[in-house]
Image 1 (cartoon, rainbow, N blue to C red):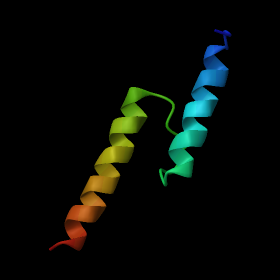
Image 2 (spheres, rainbow, N blue to C red; image 1 turned 90 degrees about the vertical axis):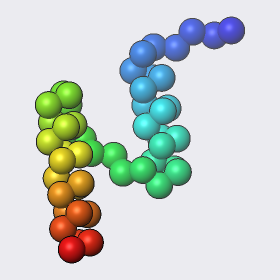
Image 3 (spheres, rainbow, N blue to C red; image 1 turned 30 degrees about the vertical axis):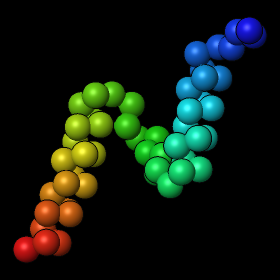
Length: 50
């Protein structure tokens, strides 16, 4: 079994997720920004339902 760098593994995972319709958000670089991004998406979707 060949070894690969962590960076290569992450890039491959990102490629696979994007190919399945997920959106890459390069601005999300920490847990705090990920939570803020999720909150924004959730608030937007919730307001569309009311």
